[in-house]
Image (cartoon, rainbow, N blue to C red):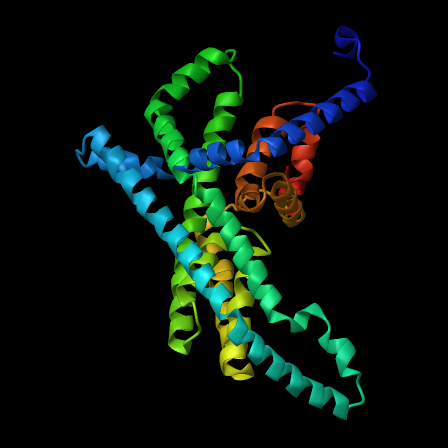
Amino acid sequence: MEQESGLTPLLRLLIAGASTVVIIGGLKLAAPVFTSIFLALLIAISVAPLLGWLKRMKLPGWLAMVVIVLAVFVFVSFIIVVVVVSAGQLDEKLPVYQSRVDEIKDDISGVLERYGVDAQDVLNLDVFEPNRIINATASIALNVASAMSNWLFVLVIAVFIMIEAGGYPEKLMKAVRSGSPMPERLISLNQDIRSYVLITAWLGLLVAALNTVLLIILGVDFAILWGVLSFLFSFIPVVGFIIALIPPVVLALLESGWGEAVIVLAGYLLINNMVDNVLKPRIMGHGLNLSPLVIILSLFFWAWVFGAVGAILAVPLTMAVKKIVLEGSEDSRWMAVMMEPAGKAEAG
């Protein structure tokens, strides 16, 4: 192969690296377009089983499509309305929370001074500025809502993908050479992404519902907003739970004191651990076939490329790159193996 191409391994590596940089630059430059396409593709993949079920229930194809589009429309509209309206109300209440912050600072200052600690240096840390935490979370939520604001465009793309989905297998068989493993890889990727999205969505809804009920019982402000964010951030691996946890804990502290903040913290931890460590492994089975380190790195990489939506798309996009790009070439297959969990890689 080297003699045929006339390229040394080093030169091929440099060309591949340069091409990758150009592709990443293009993706980042056209992020709004690509995120819309990727979201539409995820929707189409995820709702395909529901579309098939509606057709098996003797519903005409066009009516089944309308039902699905309306359901997605209502669901996304609800999320956008809750986030935008609640973020505005939250901003109006910040002065009230700031006065409570000052009271807590005075209490902590008195305790620290009794132990001979310079309270001023400690209280100047960002951790004692809850308003910054709340503002940062609201900003992330608004960024996600803003990215979802072109959901009509996303839905239109998703509809056309679903309309043409039936012809893709035949087109693919014509496009690739006989015996190519690409069709099997695409089918496997489609199943893996659908399984990941649906399981994450259902478990995210369960966690969001339980968190919302907990916050309503405790009387924490904006309980529905924090529940919606729990659902959205359930698609962000590792750090999503932490981001969703901090604002309601801070609000509970500002509104009712340390006792209620601890209850909210304990409740969130209990609910999340029960779902992630008990329900999720039983339902998801073989898992994502990605190591924890790869998941974390992919999260930061795709968030850098596509913004807040990139963090939500991180796992599906990484699965696609691994399955289609890296496993599709002998030269890059070793990278696909390195991305797998330790036990899986050793077994392979």
